[in-house]
Amino acid sequence: MLVLGVHSGWADAGAAVFDDYAMLAAVPLARLTGMPRDGGRLPIEAIVECLDIAGLRADEIGALCLSQGVFPGRYYNHLSLPRRLGRGLRQLFGRDTPISLSDEMRRHGQAASALLNLPVLLDDLGLNRNIAVHVYRDHAAQSLLALAEAAWDHGLVYTADETGCCASVLKYGRLAVLFDDETDLAAETLTPGRLLGLCVDALGLPDAVSLFALAAHGEPMLGQAMLAHLRVDDDGHIQADFSAEGGVQRWLRRLAQDQPPALVASSLHFALSSLFAQAIAALMQRHDLRHLALGGSLFADPRMVHMIGQALQPAGLSLYPRATNAALPLGGVLDLLLQRDGIADWQHRRQPLAQAAWGRDYTADIDPVLGNAGCRLVSHDPVRAAAALLNAGKLVACYDGRARGADGGAARLVLFSGGNPGATASANQRLERPGWLPPAIYVARVGLGLLCPGLDIAQAQGGIAALPAPRWQQSLHAALLPDGLVVPVAVDAQQSPLLADLLAAYASLSELPALLGLPMQVGNLPPADAPAEALQLLQDGRVDYIVTDNAVWERGT
Image: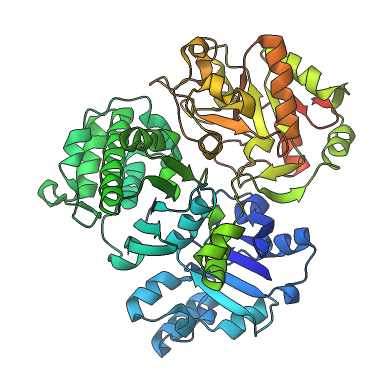
């Protein structure tokens, strides 16, 4: 069955197309519009792009998966006459705003199928009216993305994002939800994710990623003070009470004014990590579980996952890496397949999606685009030439024809050597990113055990921070976070052959087992995808060279 997955949230909207369990295409809306975290509407461009990549017509789709996102007012069939008139006037003056489906479901206590005019929506998307429509919860999608990466068949699945937390138990051939804050809690309840969002705003940071990165550079001196207002109840819920401080926003504003930002960020990071470890430990003990899958945007931070793993020591730990909401359409399709097939068949047929290819394949396009733009061809021996340039301290963009994940993954990176302590700050400066944003350290699968003893392949592909072996700590100084951790990523030679070959060639020159990499991304803009975007990085002097499957290029005169 051909399935179209759609997420139309306020941010990170996107689409994906599957043929049963095989992903054919996935595209975040931001990649097409160039707007950071683009959303707030139906991602029509992403839907059209996914269908085009997959070579499908809209009328061939057999099922549609929708998130509880935002939709234009015309797709709701329950709006009162005053609301319809008011929205009509706003639309007339160009000020119409979409309506949150999850908010309407809470307000009216009705299912999505009762609120949405699905025939009109299907017609507008060019889909057949008789296809199945499945509306999925965000936490269900996040849970299944993490569970798809697991090599075990029983354990706890725990997710956390801005709406709250969700816990499910996979045991005895059943997947049972213990609680889901997304549906159980009132919209105004202070969840860990909302506390994080308020802290991001108070510190004037662009997003949670920046806060987590900044946290590595501070001491958690206020961590215990934060924990005094937070607790885990008997059911595993994380609760907050800042009433004695005049409310959480007032308290955070005082902290932001009086304390260094890194100290506040580090304290919140410590408090959240401690709470999650406490809540998860209680649930695993109560249900006699030893394996853990983590999902949701709050577990996109490698250091937090490392701290939780160190505290719990689970027998198995899995997660979907870089878990932004752009991946929700993938999880939504997995949720539909679970409802259709049952957990036993789903587990047998699931396919890990952490390294799945996203977007178009530009392998045949990148070299002509660079050549026709006047770039100079440095070498037709790309691997050896690029390895030599990296060993000489140059910044080299690795452009594989097919991106993996919403941010390009191991296929699209700005690479540099880790021997120079100032290399990370210099690379971030050229990409207009804060100097404290950490790089990942890319290592061949066979070399992972030497770099980070005890870390398994699945965890390294998931982006979990780890302690490197002592022999590499000095020679890979630029990869080290202030606490001595690194973020290793195991490179699969079949999925990322160009990077795998580069690692081998670089190791033979430098005797270092790994390269450092940052996303091919300027500031907060979406990661570079099309060849023209990679070309712009080179022309603007963001990188010194671009290496492709066929050549190494530098900016022309």
